Image 1 (spheres, rainbow, N blue to C red):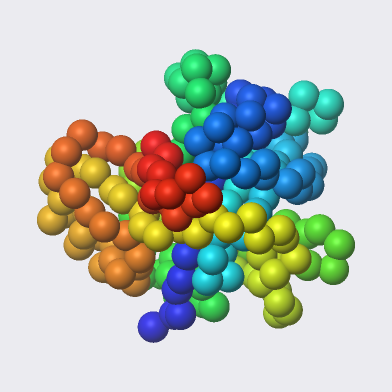
Image 2 (cartoon, rainbow, N blue to C red):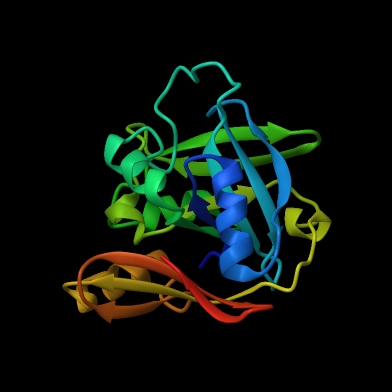
Length: 212
């Protein structure tokens, strides 16, 4: 069985400036500027989130050329863009694994194609649906496998924010829990009954905060 753990989680924003301001108000910290994703024409801000995981604030990079493919995390979806124009939103959680091929082989759902990325001397493989969608609207995680080396979070700022729980709401919670179990990640999130929704519970300088 692959060794799976939460790697990072993504909050989408209309612009990074909008996202940074909103997170400063909600969490009491200013998320540090990260880097650019040339293959997707997006950019981000990042910070540590505890347990070798990180918080990612992501937005379309207005200075980048068109990526030549649909962007990840539904960022090209007009419905997502309309939601993000109002405020930043929880988009996706990403699970790190040491055997991505095994995860894909065991998955009862299509997790998308495996895309190779590189920045500096680090490379990683990530599941990305070609149509820019998110499995079950983001309730199921994307999966990432890093090249050998320290986790990227170790080089990020520790601003006192820790992810304490991933919350998943779904009208048929038992069905979702069964899928999570087959993916080997049922221990990484809490499933609730209700309208489909993803949220992240964080311990912050402002106390416990839920971002949805």
